[in-house]
Length: 74
Image (cartoon, rainbow, N blue to C red):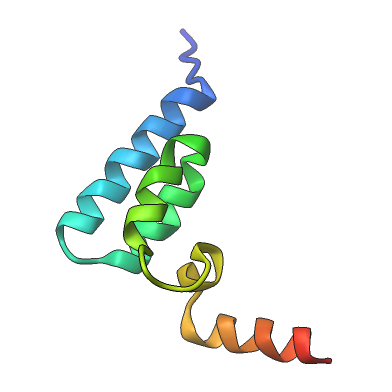
């Protein structure tokens, strides 16, 4: 017996996990899983980073963001 899971089901599971992490005040983890949820996670990403810089950069860890800034300066 084989079980097939569609990408929309994956997205829904990722989004629910992201919401759980947000409820635990784990914003960076929530952002990671919301980004994996695809279009379903876009609204949550906006809510997580409302009033900050761009969401993708804010979702990066501090060290990763520094690397991106250094690479863009070169």
